[in-house]
Amino acid sequence: MKKLICILMAFFTLATVSVAQTPTKTPAKPTQTAKPATPKAAPAKTTTKKDGTADMRMKENKKAAKPAGPLKKDGTPDMRYKANKTTTKKK
Image (cartoon, rainbow, N blue to C red; front, side):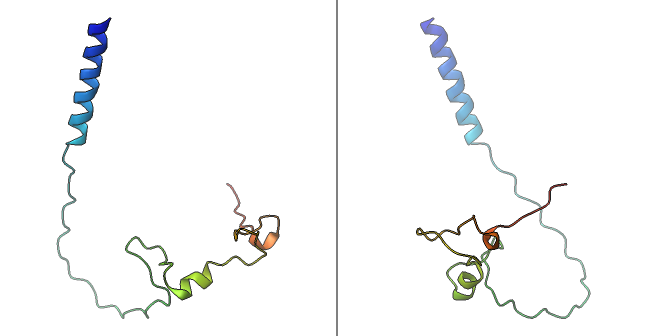
């Protein structure tokens, strides 16, 4: 029984190490194609991070994130009020 446990531990250890060292594939760079000239859009009022979410260090993004209704003592929106609820219809 002791040998079986040792063999299983060695197997799982080697399997974990081999998975951890698998190189990740880098995506291939797309080829350059001629893009039609488009007018540049006006700069956004809110600043975003690299992942596209609003940067909460900026004052204008903090104002937009405030809930419409009353807050609880700890500062989170009080979900008993309709103004704080966001409803979505399920299909």
